[in-house]
Length: 159
Image 1: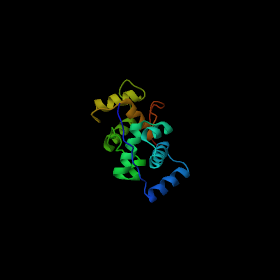
Image 2: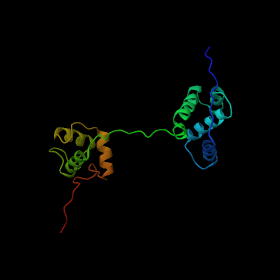
Image 3: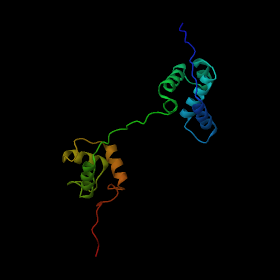
Image 4: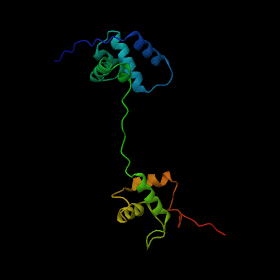
């Protein structure tokens, strides 16, 4: 059986005030509210296990919240760090080349461009090293192009 010593979390006056305002104030993400409640209850002298039971968290999560507060302060304890996000599959020049290809006539034997055909032809013509159908679909949606609906996407001026 593992015995945990009581977490001692002491909220400074400023941090206590900020947590109270956060809990009283308008809409907040659930994660932030749960973390604030966990700090509040730990500062009131409850154990990590009690706080975890009260808030439907794991004791480990409660200890991590307390640890982040003690090491890096209130901001880090309540909020997640910003994540970098995924690298775009196509760079701007590759996007332009694919869009230009879609605005031209489809290959011999096809009356319209399809998303699969665009992906295949972009790789075949070496416009991009590799590309998936979903990437092409999102690209076309962003440019409001629907080549599968029309025989020729680019129209010349009439008259």
